[in-house]
Length: 158
Length: 237
Ligand code: FES
Ligand code: FES
Image 1: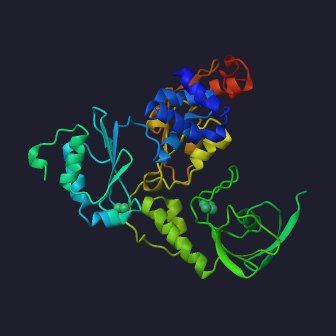
Image 2: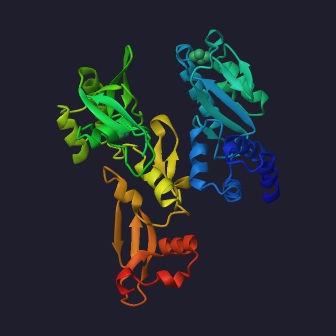
Image 3: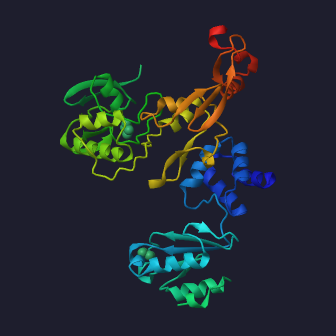
């Protein structure tokens, strides 16, 4: 791990001004900002760990917890909300057995809610691994989940 | 000597060195502007917004935080207009929503004629002025604590909400907090700050517990003097 972190830091010439891009690279490498990696960055750059923690919790792009293989983002903005997103949210939470903002223990899914994706006309919207699914319904979300290898019980399918 | 500029505050003509803030210039001229997050030992920050004043430069009048706005020639500052008092009231109400008990905040509220806040009180205690974090970073130099999150989830935090590895238990954060939010006690040779324990050092001569071990180790590190040098209390040296 030491060598990999060193390589990332070298890429930015050990410049503390590039903390955010460095952390983004670290996250890309390890899927999340793990402790050990952060401690190494802190040691290499002589930046207090408190400041890395601050950044890690400030930006939505960073995660201090492992992320799932599949990322699902459900829009809960106003336009989507009035199109019954809360019901779909409940459904996804039930199927994945996690709350929004969490990751399934098998690290397959991370489910989050976001506030307005700026594509309200397509709402309600679910973004799965960067792909936008517009006009979704409970049965559509179940189909998506199924396709990604999640067993969805028949009685939950509509 | 720094270059001097002339400005008016509440109609009074005032000379102040360029580069000082309105708040500093006003304080030097005995004009009171309420403030909570500014601290002369720390870099200007502007978090609490209590020190808002109205300035006029040319045609335009606008509100600025006096603790971060620098004086300039011909600047006209008003510290007590209706507009100013209105924002201040709002600000103190917002602060009261995080802590409506502390005497320091109540006192400022009283001065502004605010009895209660319109907002639901969450009683967080901490008002996020950041003096602890900034003192730890700028004065102590260890940066053991920082903020976490943002917006409504922002709070002062140790890394990963756990025992802060860089903390030297100096207690500066406790000392500087305007609302005494960070508890500290000393008992049986242990200093406890916000639930974290730090062993104290016994003086090698008189046997009194006089300073946290981690603080002495830090002294030894930054001065390059042997640790034993610091294991005697000031009284016995
Ligand atoms: S509310 Fe969902 S995209 Fe705007
Ligand atoms: S004292 Fe100026 S913003 Fe807090």
